[in-house]
Length: 315
Image 1 (cartoon, rainbow, N blue to C red):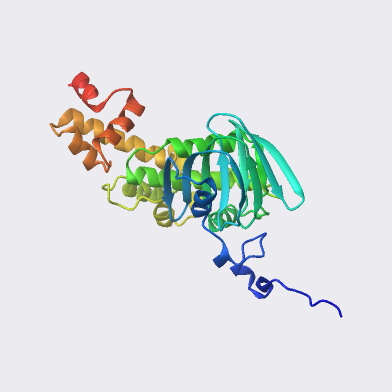
Image 2: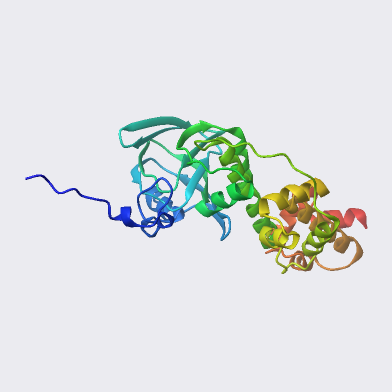
């Protein structure tokens, strides 16, 4: 008697309920942050997340000998320091690499591999929602090929972008969220260009914002610290996608939306420090910083001086 043919129950699910490249339904896949916490057996040194852009996490973990189960998000990682051997087994395929500065490792959503890492690793990880990559591909009017597995793959551009995402946490909710949204879209663009089965070429910028659209964007960015200055809101005002809005805004102003807002907040801080007797704590709160310490660190990063020292010098 012949054996019955066993079928994967997910075969009858509609395509939209599965992750590209995986037979598992989305409901059975784990969020990347949960799976990484399980596998690495620790908690991240720091982590920042945004519903529309995913999350950035910085980890330091020890040796690893385990299977990473399928995740609902793409995971892209780079290594701030150190050097460590990586071995990844997917079915009968074995890939090796070295965790070091300037390389990236990519685990596409829905994939599963066994990892063997003999010693400690310092790593920054991006958990990129599938919908974000699909949205950026659509906004850039380019095809979306399958994201490739990478193990210690040389890519200084993506590595630097990820390091920037981990380093720039200024303590201002509006600035930090706008930066992560902007950087995540930029990273998605880079992945489409360099890490898919059908690499794409982005079209050059075709002009800046119209005078009306630019005025609306500037008005929103100049609003009080509680205003919605997300990329989604800015792009919606201009009637553009996030992808095209960022390119057009930079073409018009010479700065990204995040850089423009950071510069504007710095000018506000300088005016308040120079022209009023408001305390540094009050200035920090007025500009939306979570603490005086966070404000002072951001101010010093841009000017080379603390707010108090700058005030003494200019008065």
